[in-house]
Length: 255
Ligand code: ADP
Ligand code: MG
Image (cartoon, rainbow, N blue to C red; front, side):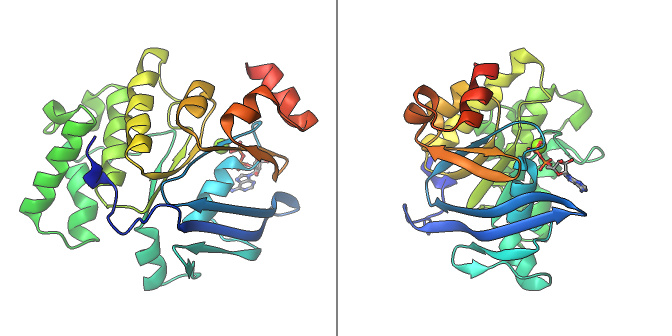
């Protein structure tokens, strides 16, 4: 992985994503309860917690795939607007990788990568192709550039999805259980790409059950339960000495 993956304007330590008193309901279900979270440039925050605790919703409100009921979310100092051009612009700064790879099935791997940069960032086609090939090289799937997603393994498709997000030159990358749909033998090839990104200084929010990755790559572990951030700490403290009963209980079940 090269350092050019990280934007030169991503001065380390600056608050990039700030959630301030964020609340979210689905009907009568209170899924995010007064969430306060700051992710600094260059920081890797791993979010863990039981199923249904609000982890995916947390990711989705950060690029406004879901609206919020109260509180505010700022990206690099700018509050996320409800809609319109400013929202599209801010959203383009947030790369998202989902459990299901969501590649465009009828486009080649290379086209999957160049689409966003040419349409949204207005990069010219030749340069977009060159940059796409460099990214595919980095994630180890350059040889598949002319193939279609269905011809690739799950691990390869997810690495393409990461390359596609990176091609937009995002300020922050969100990963929502990126390895949960993969066969076990493919999990590490995806985690290795993510670990490389983390080492290069990419700002990342990662929802995962891969505790090895959390120990290795996270600067901070955020533990959620029932829509709340119950506890957050450096991984070496969180895993060896969880403070809350809910975190202790969760860890006893998964470790
Ligand atoms: P997690 O990712 O931690 O498993 P989610 O954020 O997906 O949790 O979900 C939190 C809660 O919100 C769950 O109870 C889930 O069923 C509910 N939920 C999520 N999305 C929706 C939706 N679009 N409409 C209604 N309820 C939802
Ligand atoms: Mg989820």
